[in-house]
Image (cartoon, rainbow, N blue to C red; front, top):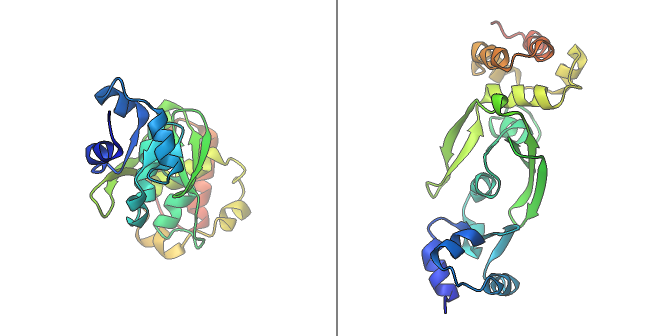
Amino acid sequence: MVSYLQIRNEFISSGCFCVNQVLLMHPNFNVNNIYRWAKQELLIPLRQGWYAFPETLKIADFERYVAARIYRPSYISLHYALSFYDMIPEAVSTITCVTTNKTLTFNNKFGHYSYQSVKESFFYGYMPKTDDENRTFHLATPEKALLDLLYLYPQYNTTEDMENLRLDESFMSDEFNAEKFMEFCEKAGSKALTRRAKKVLNTYCTVI
């Protein structure tokens, strides 16, 4: 019989795991044990079939790693990424992600996760990051995070709309790569998106 301790020893290094991983290692494993251990709070449910160990709640930024694990392929972008880079003044609690799968949301002890669907040809402009435990997640660059926002929220269309984004002007002038932003935009091949992208640059006085 496969014990909780054995499962913990096998998967603790990854922090979280899915039931299918357990079944690959132990084909005769009784998955009802997983549900029982979760009720006993020996495991933390993340989404259907995915679990983490309680001690991971104490790991800084582990919620970002969870985002990368429980719904793939995906990368963190949109409002959460803009807040991560201090491009917007608001603190963002929802971990906003982009995926090529269908749009979904999940809630667990690590937070609220929102995944918005894009076509595969728009799935680019992200890079690997590591948390304090050297676990990897993917994060949009500042330029792609902003472009993802314009792509998925076409209501940002006028100069007033762009001003309402309240992007940090010092970041936009000193750190934001307008040339890369427009390269990402041209790759998308959308005239409407290009118009909005140019408008946000004009609004924040970024020269391309």
